[in-house]
Image: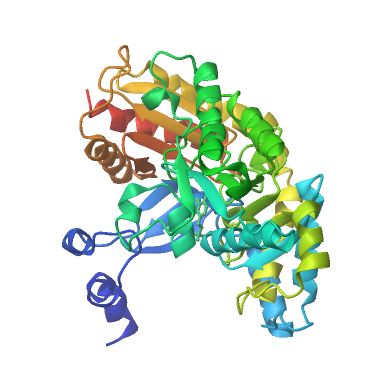
Length: 450
Ligand code: PLP
């Protein structure tokens, strides 16, 4: 086959040989896959030449936008000089060290160390073991149980999917594994009933306290949550939620874990999501925006509280990946963070494009099928409603979200739907006119539900 023939047959080859993540392969093969060939700025182009505005930054990750030659050059330089060496057995590499320092410089407070992984899922497995190891090293052998939330997403590895609160994931593979418990989520629109958002925020935070009482304080190692639940539908917690969670963890001596895989590195207009909500976790898994998705890299930010015990008491931590702190991925991440700093992208989200996006997104609430349209920084969640005045949801949320998403895609806009919620998470570089385009196209797609 010539390369031209291969390219024109990519769809068929894909169907024959490639199993996609999170996909119903029978349906996908029938519908045909969309092959994305190139990208620039906030736009992606498929193999038919069709252009889309990617309002989702890939998978919440291409935060500095596509086509950054500087990152490609940094990767090329590092690959030529040292393509690989590991951080096991007494060695490491310069970009790995400098990246750990750079992350700590933005973490603020006591999160001064980083353990590197290749992904957010591995970061979940890593902190899960760290939390147990921490308490064990302190002689608290019973402190092994972990509390997480319904409808959370923390990855697809066995521990990651168990920590996540997606029932349909648990059903595949007999999850969750032993020792993981789920409490409610701060999803006021669907579950708040007659309570005000502030009252509801306190109520769901206090479910943590009830679960700790039920399990016994001496048995609970940690509580994990995303600052804003991402894949669960951009569930933005009421302002009362996080301070109460932090209070409970502090008073009951439970490690607080903030999953920063989406919110980390600027998305909310602060370097980390926990800073936006004014709390300080003990452990914080990261990935995605660390390298803007240019190469796979993740990690766990570790507070002095945990790191000091690991360093002073533990001895070997029998955990790590061949590619933990991979020098080429670290070089990509360093260049990505340099761009974010030098272009002032976090400040841009906080002071300029974030407020602009918030106003444009909020304007969708005037649409008759929109229950609410909320955002923080460049992370937006829009609730579809069958009856917005009665706060009544559609009977088949998945179908309705998929319908809107498909209309967006047809019209050249990449949006994600989770059930009956539309999610946006564009690159930090998106312009005002591109924000307008996202909102206009989404509004047109919503018109199909009238
Ligand atoms: N944690 C959160 C909050 C996520 O959104 C994700 C992925 O979407 C993960 C963890 C898992 O990250 P990865 O897909 O890199 O394994």
